[in-house]
Length: 188
Length: 188
Image (cartoon, rainbow over all chains, first blue to last red; front, side):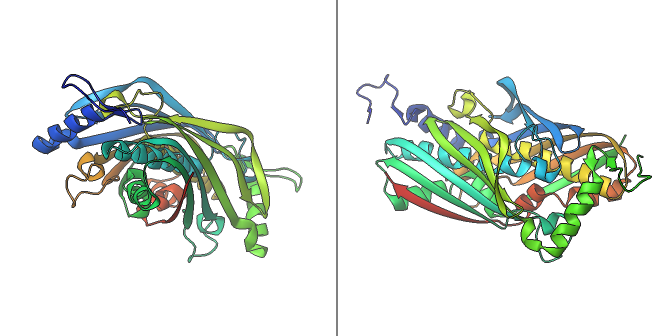
C-alpha cells in the first residue's frame, strides 16, 4: 500500500486520492451545503420501446457542473418484449447502475480505511413478474421483487467489512428503501 | 390511429405491435410462468471510480435468451468526486433507467388502450446528500432523497391518464417501494 512520507505527497489507494478524499470530508464537515448534489437525466422517445437518455449537467459543491462530455444511452426492449433490441432494457440500466455504485463504494471506502483492493468482479440478477406491469394480478408489483448480487473481491478487506461497505452504496440504498418521486405532466 | 380490417393484419400503435401485445397477455393469462423474467448485469472494476458493466443474457418466457449484442457501460465519477469522468456516475444510470422505463411504459400502455402518442420528452433531477455516503450524519441516507420528474407529452391521452400509466413503470416501482437485495461476498 502506498503511503505518504512528506506533507506534499498525496496518497493514492485503489486509484482513489485519499488525501483529496480526506480534504473533501473536512470541507463538507465545515460546510455541509457542499455535499448537496443534484443529478440529472433527460429522455427523448423515439418509437415503441426505443428512447434515448442523455446525462450531461449536475449540481454539486454549490455550483453547476458538467461532465467532460454528454453521455447518451439508447434503451429498447428485446424482441420477445416487442422491441428491436437497440439498447439495454431500462430495468437492466438499473442493475448496471447498482453494479457501478456498489463497486465504487467498495473501492472508495476501502481506500479511505487504508485497505488495498486488487480486484472486484460482481454479478446481478433481478426478478420481474410481468403480470405486475400488465395489471394481470393486483398482488404482483411491477418492479423488481428481489435482486441477488455476488461479489468476488481480492484485497485487504475481510468478508464482513466488504459486506458493510457495499451496503453504503447510494444506488443500493435507493432500491432497498423507498425514494420519493414527484411526477409532473404537461400536455403539448 | 391504425386499425385492423382483416384477421391477418397486425395493429401497430406508437410503434408497439398491439396485436402481438394482446397475444402475449393472453399467453401469460393461461401460463403465468411465461411472465417470470430474470434480468442480469455483471461488472468488472477498473480503478478508482471507473468500472464497466455488461448486459447480455436474460431469462424470460421460460427460456434463456440473449440480446442481439452485449451492451457495455463505463461508469466513473466526475473530477469533483475524485474520478476521471470516463462515464456517467452510477446514480445517473438509475435516472437514465427510470427515464427509459417511464417512457416505454407510457408508450406501451397507451398503445394497449388505443391511444396514439406523438411525442414524449422528460427530465429527471434527484437529490443526494453526500453526508450520507460519507457517514458524516447518521440521519442522512446515502441514496436519493427525492427525484423530480417532468413529462411533456403530445398525444391522445389526458394528463390524469398519463400520470396513471407512468406509475406502472417497473423502475418507478423499484425506486418508490423497497426491493429485497441479497448480497454474497467471496474473497479471492
